[in-house]
Structures are given as C-alpha cells and as structure tokens.
Length: 290
Ligand SMILES: NC(=O)c1ccc[n+]([C@@H]2O[C@H](COP(=O)([O-])OP(=O)(O)OC[C@H]3O[C@@H](n4cnc5c(N)ncnc54)[C@H](OP(=O)(O)O)[C@@H]3O)[C@@H](O)[C@H]2O)c1
Image (cartoon, rainbow, N blue to C red; front, side, top):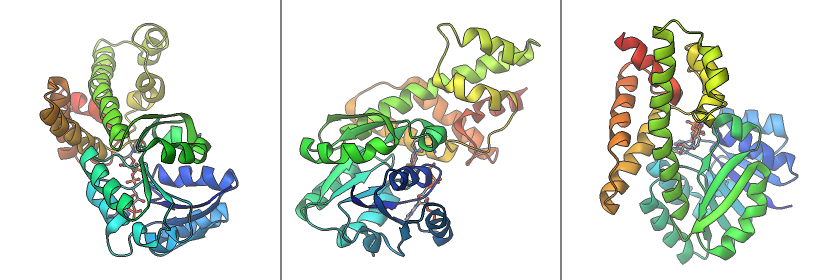
C-alpha cells in the first residue's frame, strides 16, 4: 500500500480517489474548493490539504484530475504546485484530458526535478469512475508506468501504456473523435424515432442488440429520451477536447470533417445554456430545431 495524493475532486476525481482509499492506500486529497475536500475526508476518512504541494509531501504517487491545460499547469507548477512538494523518485499521474503539448512540457519539467510523469487520461464516464471500471490510456517511460499501474488498478477495467510521453493523450483524442460522430448519430436516431411516433425504448431494445449498439446507446438512451442531461460529461469539457483534437489534426495532417461539424453543434448547445449538460444533449439541439 502506498502514500498517495489526489488533486481535483470533481465528477471523476471524487469517486476515483475514493477507490484508492477503499483499496487501503493512505490518501491525502486537495481540491480548489475546500468544501469538497472536507466532504471527501468525512466520507473516506483520509486527510485533505490546502495546496497541491502540501498534499504531495511525502507521497510516492500524486494523481490529478482537473480541467484543462492551464488548470494542470496551475496544480503542477503554479504557486503551491505539486512539483514543489514532491520527492525525487515519486511519480505524477495525470488523469486530466489535456493536450499532448502540455503533457510533454510538464514531463520535461518533472524529469529535471527527478520526478516521473505518466499521462493517463480516462474513459468510461461518471459511472465508470464510480464503479471503478475506467479505461486508462497511458504515455510515459515504461518503468514509471509499471510502478503506477497497480495503483491505477483500483479504478481501472483496462490500463495500457501506448507509448512515450503524450501517447496516452493522443489515444484519448482518438477516443473523443470516435465518440463525437457517434453521439450525433445516436441523437439523430432517437430524434427520428420521436418524430415517427415510435416507442424509443422499444426501438433501442432491438437495435442495441445489433450493429448499432454502443456504450453511448446503452448508457445514455434513457436519459436522452427523458430529456435529462444534468449529469455525466459536460459539453464545455467536450468542446475543450474537440478543440485539442482539431488543433492536433491540423498539426498531424489528419482530416476530421465530422469532428469539426459536431464541435459546432456543441457550440450551439453551449449557446442554449448547456455548457454543463451531458454530451448526449446533442438531441436537445435537434428538438429545438423542430
Ligand atoms: N466527467 C466525465 O465523464 C469525464 C470522462 C473522461 C474524462 N474527463 C476529463 O476529466 C477531467 C475532469 O472532469 P470532471 O468531469 O471530473 O470535471 P469537474 O467535475 O468540472 O471537476 C474539475 C475538477 O478540477 C478542479 N480544478 C479545475 N481547475 C482548477 C485549477 N485551476 N486549480 C485547481 N483545481 C482545479 C475543480 O475544482 P473545483 O471543485 O474547485 O471547481 C474540480 O475538482 C477533465 O479534463 C475532463 O475532460 C471527464
């Protein structure tokens, strides 16, 4: 069992760090909004700290799940950042979805201080975090990954190292590109069923068993039919992710026409006030169009 720190107790980080405590690790959490850290400590019996550096003191592994590139820079190298509190030989494991660029930049800063850095973005949604069955795609040096993998096992169904620094984030981009068009397709199918006067639940019961079945269909069709989006993976985060995918596509020369289109649809959802709605709210946009 290891001494750990976990930075960022949002939709994903709160349950993930809970799994680490339940697995028997000694966990100290940090959250920008202190009330969430206090609530976590009351629920799981661990400790909380006022800054990332304090949380990281003496920890063998520091895990993070914050928002975007700037947030990650803040908790790593900003005032009271984790790197300043970490010991040589410890490992920073980043579960945030960020660019490969900031990942490689922070990997270098960490390496200069004798700290390991594994990029380890996640997929599986809120339910995957709560049930400890996330897919974790990793990048970094093999030796650092091998040390971190048994710790991440507390909330993973599958955890794989794809390559060197940034390879985990590049894989997460593949994941988001695959999801974007899929959620729009699912939204159009359910919207079509509504317009045709079909029973949406009966439609999904049949088609989910055939070639159209997907994680999104299995996990989101009921809330989509019920017009309920106050949960899950926020549209604001999806736009952040698709922005990273489109910028990286430009750099690599990959053509991403559907991803670019769906990104604009999510912009419409934001303009409808849905920045914190789940990404399946693309159907709400279609309903609004008539
Ligand atoms: N939700 C999902 O289904 C899902 C799935 C896969 C990947 N992800 C990715 O995982 C990350 C977290 O997602 P989430 O849904 O858990 O987000 P969330 O609920 O909005 O939580 C974000 C967390 O980051 C903290 N934070 C943000 N900016 C910060 C800063 N500058 N300094 C310190 N702390 C900061 C927030 O603190 P406060 O409490 O103070 O705001 C909060 O604890 C994102 O990169 C997202 O893209 C999410």
